[in-house]
Image (cartoon, rainbow, N blue to C red; front, side, top):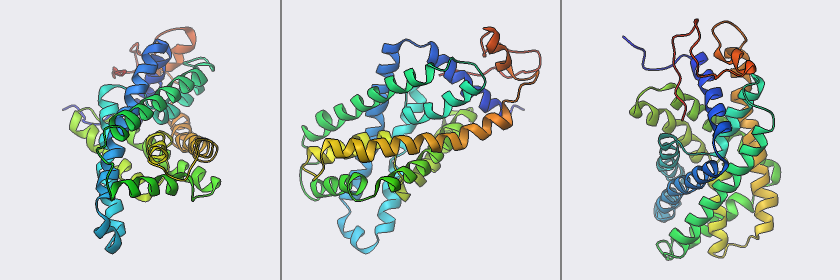
Length: 291
């Protein structure tokens, strides 16, 4: 009977296969996938803000429950991203360092991918926030307007720079665990469940995701929050970006050390000789799937 979950070494190898596939993808394809991912994550962000913003009475009596409920609905965005094979910056922060360590992609592939995906995620988030939320008027009444503005200030105005940075570490530690678990799951329901729990935790706890904030903070600015674009970039975007990188490395570097040692069963040993990492080796019966 086949196992329903891949072994850790197989998942680590799959992470590198993902990076190789992304490295070989066309730049315009990467951008379009990243644009779609920004919009998909924003669907989850909007649902979370609607739930929390519309629960003013419950917030005053039991704010913890509202945070937990808001966190519970947010993961729909990452589920759609993973199942559709789109490009999310924070998951690529996990994949590419692992591939670089194994020499499966050139060093310049990392900054090229991250830059393209960053701007694609940002464009998708801004499009969704401006066109499908602000201009549609779907949340342009109270108590939603006040909540959206306060939420943006809470994310980018109130915390210190180092606090956002540290929150970014906690966030992408959990996001990396989520995409790792999703890669290891072989069926759709298992992938959804594997994603849902870690993402639920990070949102309910208030950690900072650079792409999620690309929707929520600019949306607050559109509705009149006392923030400037310059403040958002200098304080929130940069701090969360760097923190998310560290969070991904906390998962990816130990995994590369433990599971991607050069041996006869590791197909990525052959990547340095120009062979495809997806080519089955004599010592491995697992055929990875790239997305």
